[in-house]
Image (cartoon, rainbow over all chains, first blue to last red; front, side, top):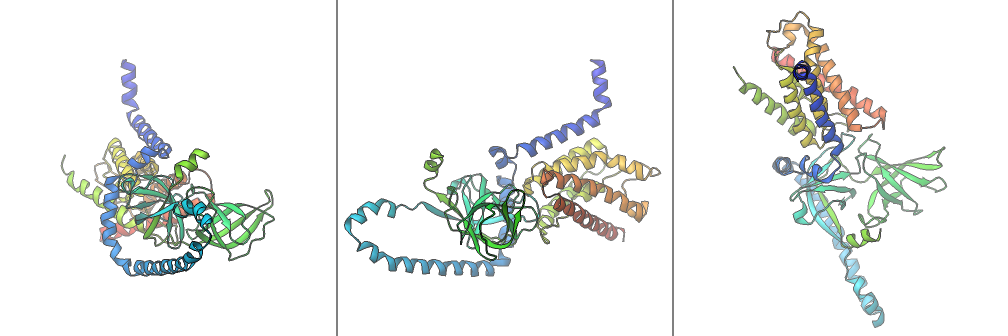
Length: 277
Length: 165
């Protein structure tokens, strides 16, 4: 006992050091578990609330830009409504039996959008995160997709009651199933921690013909994103000799440097979809 | 306990500056100086390592919570505090422990520069390695370490210069 006490006394500094570093490592490793990530992240009520206040002040400086993008989106949506209105009579006048068989799917809206505001984000780390001002109270849950008017932003990782934390495309953990518009070839979009304006589309077979400048959009394979949401444009294509897969550099359509308003996508068939998988 | 208050104020001020201002500095997606190290660089030489490690843990934890980098800053910060006194002993063997803090005026600019670069480089190396977690994209990790070490050291030296005026 005496020896033990002496030992502790002699190495107390080292022991304290090891204890603190062990706690840090445990936090680092356990961060992926859901509960902890809510407690120790910008999604908790202290730091989340703090960022909200800061954002309320900083938000005034780019109101003009945000307004412009919102009104542009408004216009696009109005156009879409007009287009759909124009199509409606044609659908109604088709045969009655058609109407009956299509009735339930016609009124079933699989995806709903929840508007949210970015209150904190980073672009200069290997693992960037985004914090939103909406949480489970607004129906936001982990694994929901996040889009901005320009395209795909990322996927919700965790949510507290009033805040949610998002893993954007520009996080090395991110992996999103995407499709090339012209050839319909699929691949997964990852980030190489280099530039926040570009990402890498992997696993596209080498025989696919890819044009520089063509659009890359979501595949709709997972329940997270509907298909055909733009992700970016092809900037560069290289063939990896060993694997015979293409490595496609994609210019992202979302400017992560100035992200303000986003929409979170709720998929109504989510539980059903997961049960099937 | 002669004057704890200035340290508490300094701790809070450095933390707020880091979280509100410097964490939002985005330059080309690479630069993010971690100026909260100034707090630990300026602790008195006689300040106990065990206490500075606990402060380092607290500071690291708070920065981590705000930056969503759980454990990364905590680890790097505690490590810096752990080696700080040894580093001071190595560099300034003649420095009297009674003197309260390491400053450029006292030890000379070259030695002060060495003192800062050593600790900042250690901190940033551990930080960015842990953040990338693997040797994935090692070139970029290395680039981040070098650029940010230069950047943080620059800020610390500027601050020291202004203070010595």
